[in-house]
Amino acid sequence: MLLDHRDEPVRTGRASVNGTSLHYRTAGSGPAVVLLHGVPKTGYHWRHLVPKLTPRYTVVVPDLRGLGDSARPAGGYDSATMSDDIAALMAHLGHASYTVVGEDWGAVIGYQLAARHRDHVNALVFAEALFPGFGFEDHTALTPENVSSGMHLWHLGFYFQPDVPEMLITGHERELITYMIKNERLYPDTATPDAVEEYVRCYSMPGGIRAMLAIYRAMLLDAEQNRQSSQKKLDIPVLALGGSAFIADRNETQMRIMADDVTGHVFTAGHDLAEEVPDEMAEVVLSFLTERL
Image (cartoon, rainbow, N blue to C red; front, side):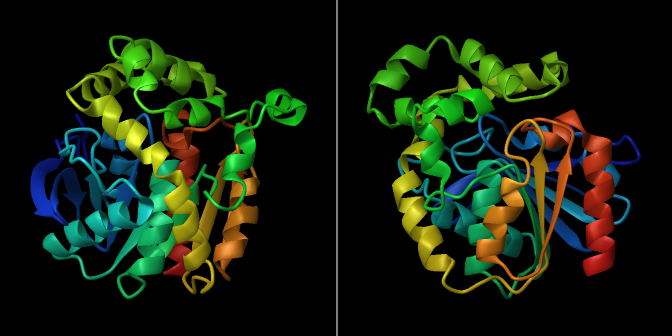
């Protein structure tokens, strides 16, 4: 359960938007901030950050298309379509302008949201992600550099193979999710049992693994979308956040290709900043929002 700063449960709901149904949570008051999680996580990833934002902001926490308790349609798992989902959700909830905070795949989707719906997005926080089309794919190669740096993203090639990943993962969702989350963190113990249980619950539901794999399998389309969008740089403030033990300052380097006004910060952490170093992340994000908006 997600709680606000008063230790009260956040509001939950569903919205039929852009040809699918999204589950979302919302709390707080003030300017709107939408938090977009990555894989293999759900909106529960933001549970530590939400109460730090709700005193000043209206926070919206969707489960992305196909993930969490959102619907699992057959298609639409490219970043542009998934960003349009969020734009439609925010319009449905009555938010004409908002800040986007994304991590992992949620950051790539957040970038597309800012690029495609610039009139509604006033700032972007891009955390622990690489762009398809701009070097993400390079880390799938079996090289000494990738292996020694811990950035050998071996699972991307595995996920692209049709049918075989579904066959091997089904029944072993807990093992895969626990391994992926703990292996990518500097502080593995921050993968607390409640979070693991929630992620396993959602990805074990019918269609859960299929939807997760569909996001990865859309990477080549995502790459083309990102290359197209990059031709016009974002003109909004962008905060690029990295974890020292994973993507680190490459978040900032990549975002400078996409935007003119970029601030970078690297935490002593791994891949999942909002669960590993939530207090530090909240401080940096709140400072950025206060100074730049």
